[in-house]
Image (cartoon, rainbow, N blue to C red; front, side, top):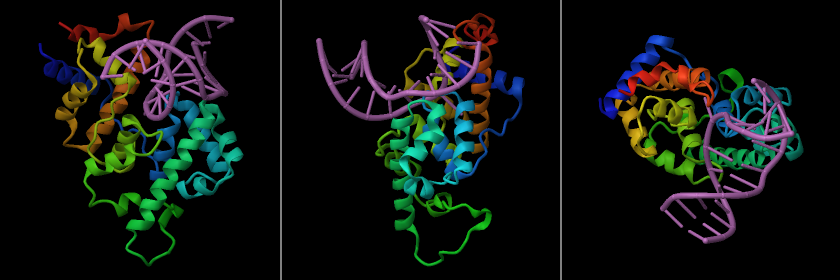
Length: 227
DNA sequence: GACCAGGTCCTTG
DNA sequence: CAAGGACATGGT
């Protein structure tokens, strides 16, 4: 069994176990915010922080740019690294807001349905994914996973999000390749369909959280793929 | 109380 | 360029 077949078997096993998931379905601004906050942090704490940002009335990118720094830090404290993350958040939010303004044809300062402020998904449909990725990576605090999360979940681009869980679960399945090759392998199977990409990433997170933590990896059915 | 969490950046050798 | 440290709170 080669690596490609292992990835295929892994994807099949996950799909059998969980079925199709609709994972991290949220407004664009919250996806961007969450993408930063989740760095090296459990998602439950990120959700708490998002709630606090909502309560404080600053859970959009433009509000974050203008928000008082202490208030922002207070809201996201529970996600750890709160000073760094506050800095990264304002930087990224400012960047995206600027890009939005620049690419706005002009006119219509009208209210948008749902009261959401960001328009990036509507504004940048013509920009190639690779160029967008490079642009995001140029922002301080935005690495590959954060950029790919924004692309895949926020902008519905066909990009596979490679995270620590993916590495673990792949190791369990006997797939031992470099990061870029791993992304390639998953992309080849999934990159034709954004819903599939998101579902599969969700399945990986669910499975890895349950079975692939450092203690109980021995119970992981995926090991049987490593033949 | 130790150890780890859906990373990223900066500094060293 | 690889390796190691810093950033920080919350859960097991």
